[in-house]
Length: 223
Length: 256
Image (cartoon, rainbow over the protein chains, first blue to last red):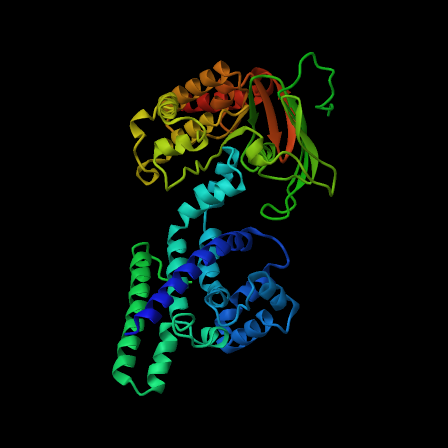
């Protein structure tokens, strides 16, 4: 198996998961507790990557981050190079593509926290951030684990977005799923089979881990 | 009703409230509309369930934002709102110790860690000692290392009370806090709690529909019904009718 692609895939998934959790926790908190009329719109936008063809997302990212837009030109100027076809570009794409897999379990978990616990914490002098850190997050540990594992597994398994925005540069943007595509194109079926089996195993292990953790609490819904 | 914020009285009330709130959800058309000032360090709000007692406490603590009114604690306005506008000191800064009927003990922390929740800034050894002292006040020192899921309703209430005292509130609001306890432990706990309060000069507002509790934990009684204050005064004045009723009922039981 292609070790370079394997390491790159894991690095991408790990960085993406960490960034996603940092973004998703405040976002999910807002979604779980807001009474804003923009809530449903934000929910829809956050869920978009589930149904959107990855190529559509990849296409807009490619165009949006490229020299055709002011934003893309700004980023290019800031970094000294364009984001497309770089590892950083892959991270941007992955974070957006896996966003619903972090936001949705967290929103459900936060919303399920007993409000009286939060009220008690507030009367004890605990402010909003403190309540998130010391009450909401510990009480939704399961959702946090779900969000982390799903984000990781989904990033490992992405193909379309990565191909569109990252291309297929070994060592820079070639992930396992793209290496697999290459191997098949080159008729290296034995090698392709090893890559495919490995990806299959990762996803199966991740989901088994999640379901075993959920079933001990009598809950079988993942998202 | 006289203005609770008027400074005609010789000393400052520790609590002055004027609240006007209509509930859309739940009890349809329920209207909480009351104004009072509490001077007595042990004040009781006495009334049947559904009379608005808990909502009043939630408003004082800042968990409920009434449509209009004003709330003062120790002479400081913590919340004020004309119809439509909003504002006030947020719950976490009001230093109101609220013990609710639902003890809401954090399930992810042991009893001792629940009590220590508000003691973040205290160094570890002092914290441990403080937690031990508070658990002793509520008669729960043996429960320190137990998890909430292992505790009974009465034990959870004890832990919740100790946790509230740890936050060093400037006032204590108790919403039927001893409901899950038997008469004997209720009396003991109530005594300890009021002793702690008087030692720390913390006034206590107890909400109850229990006549005995109203008599034992109130120097002043506010009778509340359908969201309005119906009477305010000494226990034997305000609760005379209820007491007579109770005595007649007990008499009837004895004769039978």
